[in-house]
Length: 461
Picture 1: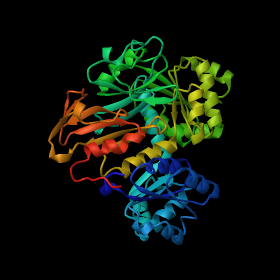
Picture 2 (picture 1 turned 180 degrees about the vertical axis):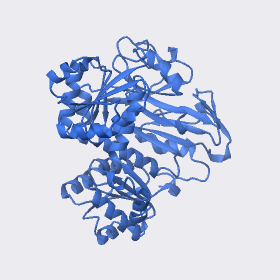
Picture 3 (picture 1 turned 90 degrees about the vertical axis):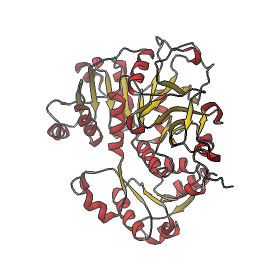
């Protein structure tokens, strides 16, 4: 275990999709984690699979929170699927001594115009909405040309994008060291047949590989052309579902020049309400996107991106499959059940966005905020991207990348020095105080942190 100064005692309230994923990732770190849930089945699963303290109980009772040690908690995360339970748990946790509190909430409408008031009353430090976070993720993937996943670092100056390689890609069949890539980009990881790897110079890419590439935005746009598809200046988008997620996505896409948006809602009354919320530029139609005849009638095959945003995973999957059969270039679907993530991949849906997973990732960034400026958990939790400020042991002021001793499961994707950003090679020098953006497999996170987190950190047994 590394760095006692960064160890935190964390209580997670709720072991649903958000809480379980959060507990799973944090249990692999130096943090001490307790999870409270009222479901004995979930508690038993936690006890059998994770290194956490699992407490069966209702977190709206002070004695349950005290049993979990709320009085010494550095962070409490209220992450159940019940907004009212989360809100009351925040109040109690603050009164009982928790240092910091994150409130996860689904319906932000109730606090929209009273944010400051609610924050003062409930005592939370950070408010997270699963649906709004999912909308942000969808926006990033649609706003880029062909990327299936997008994360930003260094205040937006560096991006990580995931792309799937088509049969016409110029990248296929050549060793990475021999590829003529645009300046300022680096391939940091590859997913092949479900396995994530950090490739070396002799690695050759294959059709249908998913590649993670780090670099500056303009350079990444150039890289996307190598992945096989031409860049379009104007795009047509269809959204299935007029729920809060669908409306939020439509509103955000409507603000992007060059993107035209249509929204399909099967309920006539709901469609009228949605149309009143959206601008006249968004066309709201009454219809069922799981109905092939309706899709034919609306010429969905001419659409560039189809987004299924309902709360029903089965409907989302069916609609994406039908849209793909009509010729849609890219399908995006919200995933409501964690177990379905692999199913979405098997069904060749291009982008599967889990609102709960996005929420868990944002919480992880907050947890690591003392030692790590930013974190992205990608590839369904099988890899992480860290943004660390470099400080070396022994008081060294600089080191070459090749001499850092990075494990095979980690790679530096970019270095930020003042206003400059560069993509390093083995001979590049990392200086004390540089921001380094690192892709790493989970088993190597602690080793990577120990390299960069400075002379006053120490390793505990």
